[in-house]
Length: 347
Image (cartoon, rainbow, N blue to C red; front, top):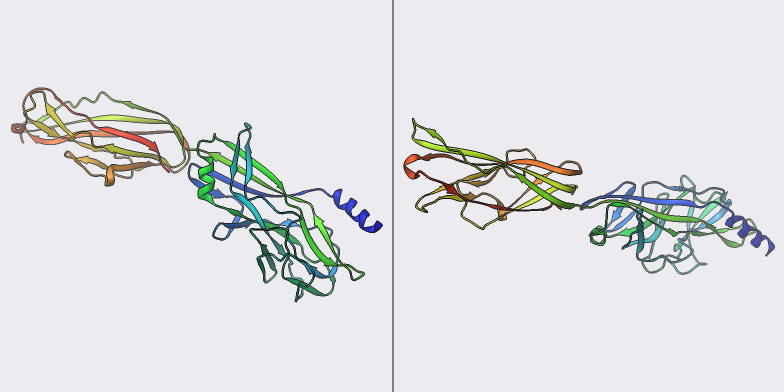
């Protein structure tokens, strides 16, 4: 009994390790910097924690955590804002490296994890209900050796739920840490089945940059000065609007053309009209022709301006024009018209 008490004190003096998940979110784009997908919403870390100073043993019975873990975590930003997200630590992987072993049955410890898998030198334990569980097998060694060398947590993340929880949150780095002490059983030199606890914590670092459109500025006089072709007896004109969007953009702008008019210039008398065109000739524009000779060219009246890297400013030109209108079809005087665009963050 005295030996067990001393062992517990030594464990309490050991430094904590840190299993850290790094997530980068720009708008609706989620990137895991150091995670591996296991299928569905299940992930594990790409790096392993090193297990130091383990007692040699002839039998290793893998188990998961000392206590059950919550289904959610509360992330706190560097500005002190809190957001609850559905990130659940619900399993563990062990790496036994090249240890030779014989698989045996676990006849000693309950509860058993709902997923208890041995694949090569990787042991995977997973359970949504309880994380204080063990494998349904043991690893029996021909001699006393280090039972395993590395371990790492597995966790559940629903990215859609994560993005939804972050809606309306400010830009910043959000973090959370929960205890993730690991418990495993082994056969002692005296033949008794005992256990050891490896102190650990699971940390999430989430770097969040939301999409936000703060302002739209449109410059340009909107005047279409006619140019006459006296040879072909036609008239043409064009003008340019410069669009500047200010905000935080990870993917770009979504643009909707509102069908509030007929996209024609009407004479002051109302007797004649001139259909006009609207074009975006820049490579970032999803569509070049938005309106062509008075007819909308966009699917569902929507288009986008796409950027390749996050930016706080988007700037581009729109060309409005009419071309080669027969002079006989127009009258002398002033023409006017308008069109309306709605700008939103592109998700």
